[in-house]
Image 1 (tube, rainbow, N blue to C red):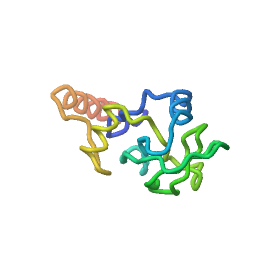
Image 2 (image 1 turned 120 degrees about the vertical axis):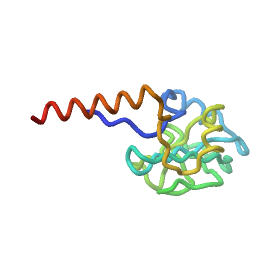
Image 3 (image 1 turned 120 degrees about the horizontal axis):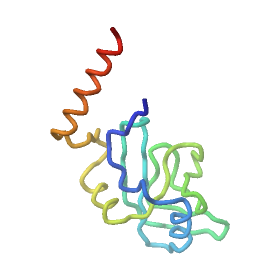
Length: 133
């Protein structure tokens, strides 16, 4: 069974190629978004940041740091230079990303609890009960 994240990721449809092209076009003062999906599938924090320095060798600096790492970023991948194997990365600040950043600040987000979701949960429970007998 695949576990789904508890949050809706507004940057999920951004490809690595799109992000690289976006970051290569940034200049000092431009806005980017720091995408911090720490805590596995449970936590997502997005912060808006300003570009403070751009280096020709493919590095970019922001006025804010990642939760794990620092404020230096690889332009090619959007990954953090201080923690390149970590989960934090830069993304494009689309309207959905901006909305998420202003409405939710490192909160446990849950999918909306609708009638359909309630039925889904009940069906899963019934399936487990029948399968365990």
